[in-house]
Length: 215
Image (cartoon, rainbow, N blue to C red; front, side, top):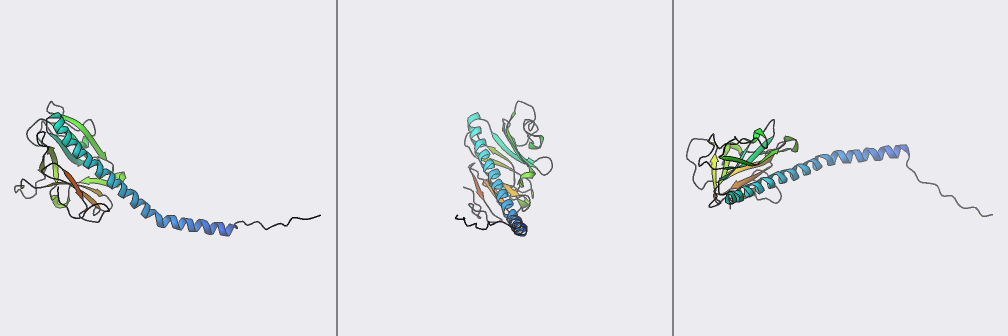
C-alpha cells in the first residue's frame, strides 16, 4: 500500500501575528497625517472652486436679472465661514434696505423688502478644516463684490484700512484657507472686468501660480 507524503502546513504563530499587527499599526500611524492633509487639500480646492463658480454665477445672474447682484462673504456661528449671493436694486453698497448677512443662514440672510432678493447662501463648516476669509492686513479685502448688469464688471466694497481712497482699478480678493495652517491659502482675485482668478501667494499649492495677478 502506498502512502501519500504529508507536507507540513504553514501557519502564523501567535508571535508572528502580533508582529504583523504591530507593523501595520505603525504604517497606519505614519500614513495618517499624510492622508489627513490630502483630504484637507481636496476640501480646500473644492470650497475654492465653489467660490469661483458662485462669483461667475453672480455675474451671469446680474445680466439675466438686469439688476446688480452681490456676493458678500462673512463669518457664521462658531468658526464657520459663509457668503451670500443676492440681487439688489439699490444703487448704494450696504444700505439698510439692501444688506445681507450670511451668518443668519440660508433663507434668512437678507432683510425682507422689495429691493433685495437672496439667491444663494453657502456656509463652510469649520469641521471641514477650511475657512473663507479676508486677506491678511485687509489687503484688497472684499466686503462685497457687486456685478454690473450692463457690463458684467465688478465693483468692490473694501474694508476701510487707512481711510484713503481706493484706486478704481484695484483688485478685490477673498481667501480660502486651511484653518490649521493659514499659510495654505488660495486667493481669489476679482478684477474690475468681473473675471475671477486664483493664486497661492503664501505656500505652494499644486496647480496654482504663486504670483497673484488678476486677468
